[in-house]
Length: 40
Image (cartoon, rainbow, N blue to C red):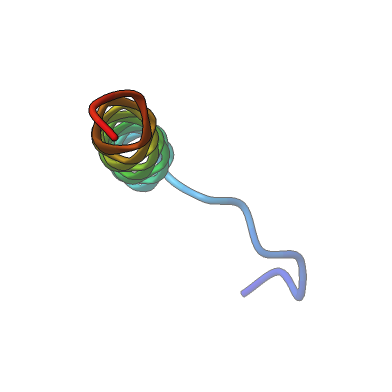
């Protein structure tokens, strides 16, 4: 065993997917907040 940790391709893909999903949720939330403020 090597003491160095190297993430597998699958783990990298999961990380990218999670990051993208989080970004999408934040963007949608921001859009909803912006729209609700415009309606006032």
